[in-house]
Image (cartoon, rainbow, N blue to C red; front, side, top):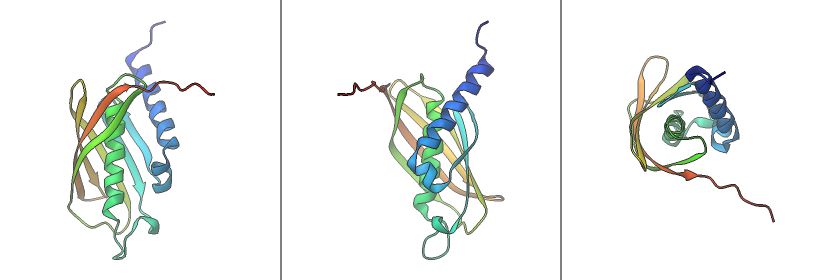
Length: 149
């Protein structure tokens, strides 16, 4: 029985969940995968005290990490399994301070080339667009398995 597009999408989403779980950054910050499909990934994060800077709002680096992680996962969804994806450039606009609630980062691949992918990401709280990111990711060869010595 041939594998369907839906089966591939489910497999890819499970792979993303596994990769996210293995990511130290995602675990430390509490990022959760909400949705994934080719060229799109959505992460969410419940704001906690550990995310806040001295003025009681979420630190910009946390928002950037959330957007970057969502962007990397969206890119991973449009390349062959095992391909290396790495951020080479990121620009982010912080539009609103965030004090509490749940943040949702939706990343979309705008263009995928042979070596680079351009991705945008909207970070929202329950009501507002709080940050907007534009990123470039390198698309490298599949990771070679290392032989143990």
